[in-house]
Amino acid sequence: MHIITLLLSALFIPTAIAAGSATTGSDPETGLAFWRYEAEGILFELNQRLPDQTRAFFQARGFDTDAANQFATSCVFQSRLLNTAVAGGASLQFNLDEWRVISGNKSSSMATTDDWMSRWKKQSIGQAARIAFKWSLLPTEQTYAPGDYNWGMTSYGQPPGTRFNLTLVWHREGKHESATIRNIECPADSPQETP
Amino acid sequence: MSIPMIRRQLFATLLLLCTLLFQPVQAAGTSQLLQALPDLPKAGDFHLTDLDGTEHRLSSYRGRVVIVNFWATWCPPCREEMPSMQRAWELLEPEGVVMLAINIGEDEDTIFQFTANFPVEFPLLLDQDSATIQSWPVRGLPTTYVVDPQGRLAYRAIGGRAWDDPALLNMVRALK
Image (cartoon, rainbow over all chains, first blue to last red; front, top):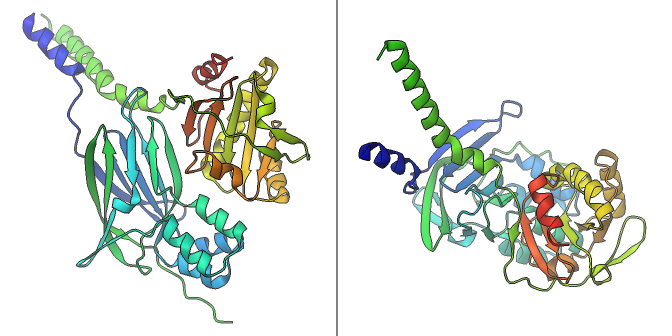
């Protein structure tokens, strides 16, 4: 009886944080690749965005060709980050300034919203275009309650077709956690037509 | 004990284990409710115009529960939650709850075209210069706050929700 009680009790004790897993694949409709990292309480997903898609999105919102091209060719992904903890679970904090992009022997930080916004201001990009840009990127910092999430573009400052590793960092209940997604591939660019 | 009985017991044990193991995954799918804000910060007042030209001042709704949603037409989770917001509004509007969806940075034509595919009857407000969203504690779209009758931020949801989820509707109703 004692053993059975112990076994049943063990089933209800929260397990230690499980090692996460990274997976990759491609969208059957578009052929575009995705990478996904999942661990207890967190899911992060990167979906390739073709530079043409990104150029078209921002040109339709007031960016000139040159500015749209600068961003579109900076290795842009559609991203999704979720706190997958159950209701009543821990909140999750992140700051993209802590994340690292590792390509070859070089480690660099991500280009986040503020970096791009100061660039657009210097280039006199209009206010409406800057507003659309700001809100279409994944927020640089957030605190998610269980069930909270954001979608948004992220850029990694690498040329089209480059492969890199990404170290994610997040905080939960005062603990610093990190994981690395390996061999992510920046979307390739199609040759641009010259006028 | 006969072999069929052992098999049945083994099956029952496996079923119990599977239920326990997958419980967190199922729960994760139903945990997207609203985050209570224990400090109840005061909601920043705004004065915005909707698609019909009607002006809305948040403070004029004092005494009523107000759902304030920040969104844009190009934002996938914003689009996804719109139909459930409409269903929620159909249930809550007769009970006196106000729902205001504040569009960020887009013009009337763009929003009008959007409503052809996503017909909604609650007011869609224009924050073209993004002054209102920047004065609220919002970092990404969609973000929704539920303002209590005293004009305080009672709940927050970052990301889309199934707004017609009965559990979520009851959280809103409980503020009245």
